[in-house]
Image 1 (cartoon, helix red, strand yellow):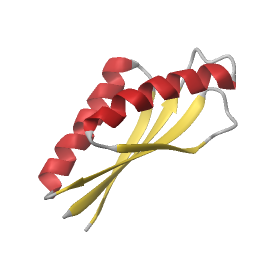
Image 2 (cartoon, rainbow, N blue to C red):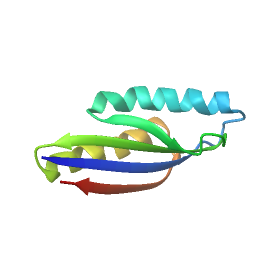
Image 3 (cartoon, rainbow, N blue to C red):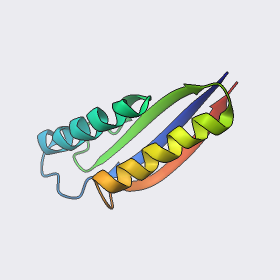
Image 4 (tube, rainbow, N blue to C red):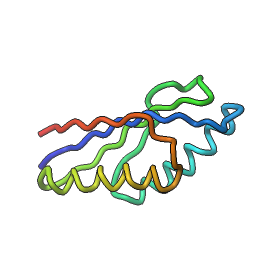
Length: 93
């Protein structure tokens, strides 16, 4: 068993308020949770155009977990082009 942790930093250009930011993040988290991952906002709670999400998946082996996290990155880019600033994966065994 392996646990994959994906940290993504997002820049929400059109957010004029925290309410705008929350709407974008809620929509994104709802869509990503369908991909067999747990999602949480972990940083930059008080900034209106910046967010950091942590996503976690559990798999039988690293290849399966890696595919899942790659799918997440692709889905973020598809749903909100230009939103993703940085992503980093970690593996816990």
